[in-house]
Length: 69
Image 1 (cartoon, helix red, strand yellow):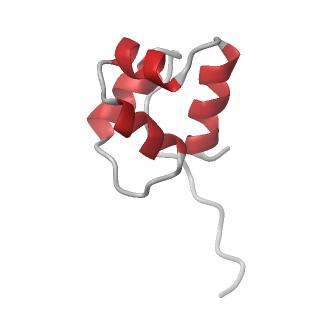
Image 2: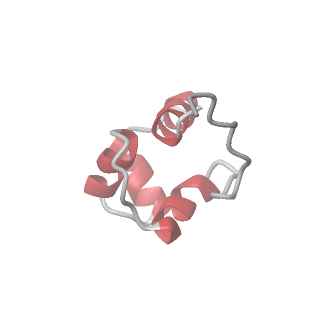
């Protein structure tokens, strides 16, 4: 699952609005909006602040092989 969808799904599952999530995570509302919209360049420390509320953190995961080459 894409990070943006993951955060949005988790936020909604616990009944938080974007402003509430931003406040609880200690980040700005703009950051939450950009995160949920899939902005490609975000600060990992702030992403981890948000994910920590759900018991997760950013980590390296194996990438599936590129079948096009």
